[in-house]
Length: 339
Ligand code: DAH
Image 1 (tube, helix red, strand yellow):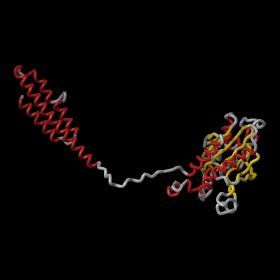
Image 2 (cartoon, helix red, strand yellow):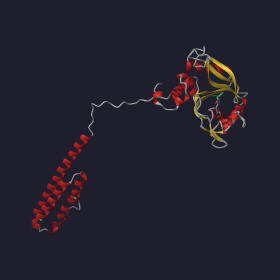
Image 3 (cartoon, helix red, strand yellow):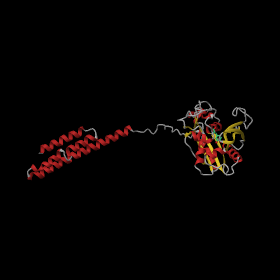
């Protein structure tokens, strides 16, 4: 028995010495000291040992177990130490190295201008709403008094999903969605992306942004429209800016106008920036057409309103004096970092 225990101990120590990782040490522990281990088997065989020898053999087994356990634990400690040493060496941080520069981003010029526009209108009591980019032909055209044979509906101008569904060409359909909700009065702006099948150049892109505006209430007149847009232009471009309303045509407003602001670069004298005109066009607007009100369930005898549509890119280019719209979409940080 003594030799057997001696041999178990020697074998265990040999295996422990050979082990180079924790898993191997655990295997030794299981195979020797575990429930089905060799040493446990010896204990189970005690019944075959003569009664008078049992205390001695028992003591011997315990001694062997303790010796192996101690050896095993020492080996574990050593291995842990080695592993730690290894990690400390591999994960050394050289605190004297120069730090990596954190590149801090900022909002896109379009987003900055949109935030500013939203602030101006929210300050005048407007709500900011949104409408879908994929729109029914009805909302984009028909409900805005644009007849089926209108050239704006041509495939050359518009991206169709099918006969009835398209990518909206303007944010004006949001007017219709808001009117259909039936909650009056309305005082809203609706910023968003619009689409037209245009070739990319310095002033065109197949996808750009507009900010729609609409007010519907009792006793709304063109004077309200003028005052509102003048206030908007002054807050956005500065107090010295003059505003001019030029008669124009939009199917969904009557009367309609385009709004120019005096060139804030030359003060209206005429320069390269305003192409010698002294004025710069910034938006389209008008009094909501009675037919448009009626189609969306509003009685034009009781309610009137005005609407306007601003090209976001257009005013961003003006505000930051950028001469090519493509720059806004190219994501070139050398350009964007300037704003
Ligand atoms: N939707 C027009 C466009 O894309 C812009 C516009 C003009 C909007 C007059 C309006 C408006 O609300 O009253 O050209």
